[in-house]
Amino acid sequence: MAFSKIAAENLGGSTLPALAGGSLTGIASPGIVRVGGASATGQNVGHLALDNIFTSTYTNYLVVGYVNLASGGSQVWLRFRTGGSSGSTQEGANYKYIWTGANYGATTASINDNSGDSKFKLSGGTISNDDYPSCYFQMQIFNAFNSGVRTSIQGTFTEFDESAVLSSYEGGGSYHGAESHTGLYILGNNQNLENYTINIYGLKDS
Image (cartoon, rainbow, N blue to C red):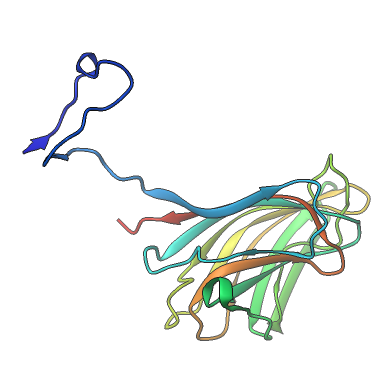
């Protein structure tokens, strides 16, 4: 027996009645589902590891967030992880990327590496000030879990440098190695993380 409609006046309050042996139809599952993330303030930690977020359930993911570093002058880095919470961080020279953009004064700039870096560099040297996120970003990650296809990213990245000058970049990159990635690893190159909010969403294929 399938129930396609439940009239509000029949609920008798805010609690749904039990459906013994029945099923609900006509309710579409969401096309985007939060699969992980973290949020904290007043920290002084060397990195943030987000494990068990990439699985075979989704091919593509959306990552939205910001990071404030404990002291100025540091870049924000991103690496992939494999093997879940007991796994390892990928630190080999397999990251290739290009972000291009400009600052407030329309001075153009780029952050790139085409020979193979040990991370995705999401920013230049940034400010440490609670009024200014060191770096905030929105990026899509493609084929993270499929070891047969290179994991790739594209997105937008905005930073405030040590003089509070805003620069914004967009571009793409890929990890040149056959790995099944399961998580992300975010850090500053020479400073700890103080505040951050990161949300990761899985995108349904259909």
